[in-house]
Image (cartoon, rainbow, N blue to C red; front, side, top):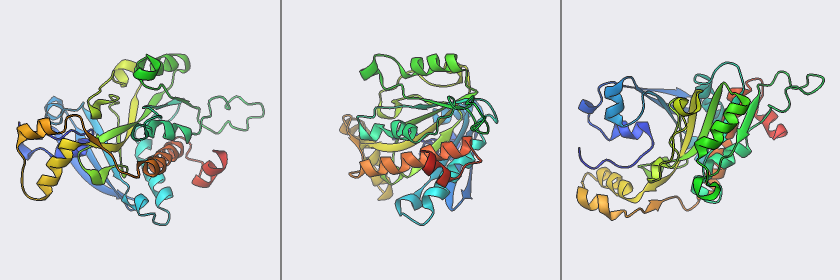
Length: 293
């Protein structure tokens, strides 16, 4: 197999392979609130080997309307994300949100900003008078990164999970894409968990059902693109190709991110946080969340 651009998106893994590589993989598209949703389903081990990803569902929500600042784009996007999440999370029980990544590095701060916009309710459920009894119990943890805590993210999340015994974990993290146009305008949701840092070649221990003992739904936003992958994508768009050996060595670990990454991360991470809230608390509206948060 030739050079394959680095990406965390199952949709892009599918795009980069010929049809003969895709046995055991199903693909479909649909529209929710004016946003395109692509679904890649890896059905078996053949499909897993073909796309180099675990068996499971991978939903990609493309939020182009958000960047264009169209009317109702934020609310429609949050509700579209909530709709996709609702199909994956258990109907009842406590949910633990894990905001992964390093808040000191903007392209890696998606999990942190999303967590800041999460509505945590676990401590309110037993409030006298039953004022919050209709809300689903939700907790949130930000495990940080190994380089600043000395502890693997999975160990922190596992310790909290053992304490509160959630029905599921929703892990939010930044991802890598192979195309610049997908940065901060795409959200991938999967029921297979996540390997923090894998998109930039710094993979840590996985957060999934095997390591945590409960279902793990991963919500990821691509914020960076590997330089070699970007060069390959641009060459492909121009109808040409680049030398594979030079592509492998040219990037030298160079990672590219948009110049307005601060505002992009703030916008889409807030949408992710609100989308999770709407999925977990369907009785609330975006206006309700604005007031409560």
